[in-house]
Length: 253
Figure 1 (cartoon, rainbow, N blue to C red):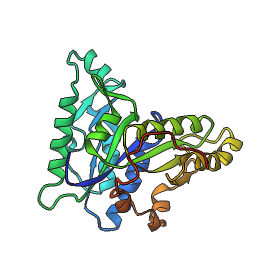
Figure 2: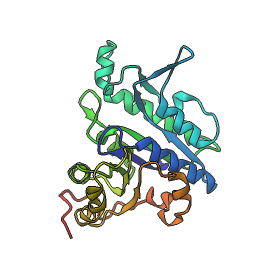
Figure 3: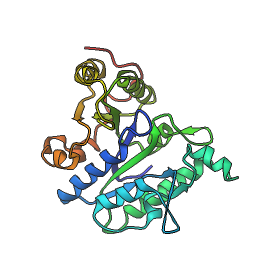
């Protein structure tokens, strides 16, 4: 879809911390002197601040850049209702076609890739990988169109084995590359045993896909990422396609 490389940050569910992880990656890349663009093509669920609609994820991504940019170049399609985009669009009386999403995404990336612009995109999806984003289209369809490696953000606690393995299987069955998985403490710990054993069990099932980070609830993610140059986000955005297009479930080791 575009010549500029990037990472597509997806989640195993809504509220797992995609924006938190995306923003920390952007801050880290900016601190390293990289020219980064941020994009969340669709957002729903707005707050009213001083009479104006405000989408929190968009604001957090812009703040991570450390400079102001046009909101419609970060999130070109927005809905006030806190619903899946096609549902919100139907309620607003205007069904959302996938072609419109692709066109808006393509235009935003072209703006970022303009003269003196970004050389690397961090794109945040909506909800989980199979969350509907338009009529008869999901976040996975957008990731396929972009052909960016996925970074999967998952919860640390009970239930993450099923959600994460399902997400990875859905990605690989569609020929999507997975750059890695981040376990994020999006909520306070309620099941320490699950949190302590999940990383080992997940690693058995993920095969060659790396479990990159485990983030306790309330941790300073940006400071942690800056202390881990080995994570090499720019390199992960350039993950080669060879060996990643086969369909099939990752087997335990």
